[in-house]
Amino acid sequence: MFKFISALLLAALMTISISAQITDANFRIFDAKGNPATLEKIIDALKNADVVFLGEQHDDAAAHFLQAEIFKKTFENYGKERGVALSLEMFERDVQIVLDEYLQNLISENHFLLSSRAWNNYKTDYRPLIEFAKENHLPVIAANAPRRYVNMVSRGNRETLNQLSPQAKSWLAPLPYGEPSKNYTDKFNALMGGMPESSAGPGKILASQSLWDATMAHSISELLKRKKNALVVHLNGGFHSESRLGAVEHLARYSPKARVLVVTIKTSKEFPDFNKAADENAGDFVILTDPKLPRSFTQK
Image (cartoon, rainbow, N blue to C red; front, side):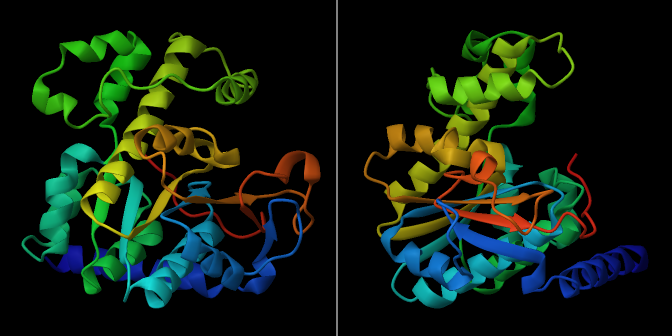
């Protein structure tokens, strides 16, 4: 028990230490065209949104700091009249019951972490958002497809999912899930072109990536259907939502009327300058972060 408490204390101190280093000098906020913007403008834009996608690089400490700030300010500004909820790529749908038990104080944080397959950087990067949601009785969505089923697709193909039980299928987007758009496919293939060859092949990897996108979108859509006038703050890797592709496109299929805001947060070697070729239209807002900041722990 003492070791566990010590680990939690260390994690909290590390979070405070990293966050304490981050100031306005460590990031720049722009609109889609590269005009200077502010955090307040992002929060103000949420009054016309049902979902905000916060795209991140998973080891970007500044991004995690900003995500926590945006989530808190969203609740402070809209929580009285709207059902603010948090949605996370970082938890898979089959652990929703575990996440709910922790939010309801039914289980300890130790058991929550043991049973939820939390990412290695949970304590430093995502714990502040979960704890804020818990303190304010806000729902949190474990949005992602279980990794074992994503791996099934990359090893075989999307049709292998048809062999799963009804219970297992309930943790995925409805089958058959949607195909990726041409723009998303082109972007994915361009990315893969700079990576080592995979035995799975780019087509299978793209199909597995699309399962992530579709399942996260379906998870968000289901909450929008359950809770009238909800406002969902969703965290995912930037590729899943950048340029309003990926999960954003799948959400449009499940909830065509949902109003979406995309905020892409990424480290830039050209910081603090906005590079039109690389950054324009990467999001409704684009936040560039200082690459000199210490990186946080990496995901599993």
